[in-house]
Image 1 (cartoon, rainbow, N blue to C red):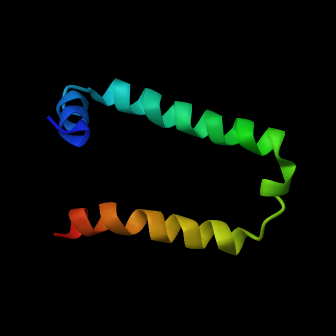
Image 2 (cartoon, helix red, strand yellow):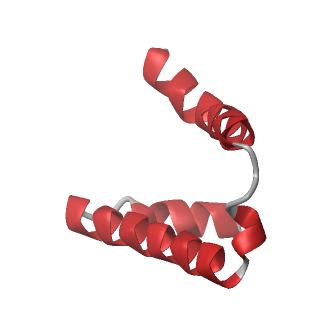
Amino acid sequence: MRLTDWMNSKIKKFGWKDIACIELASISFGLMLASILPSLISVSPWWYLLIWIVLALKPLSKVID
């Protein structure tokens, strides 16, 4: 069994509370990195928007189809 197949089988068992905890952990990790590396915050907001759009394309394409 490939790693991605194994991970997909485990993720399908997650409830909405589990997904919410993963999202909050990711956000807190990002905030921790921003506090450790203040140079991350000094980047223009347009870069963050560009990164968000690029990362959101694949999930949004699944929603549209």
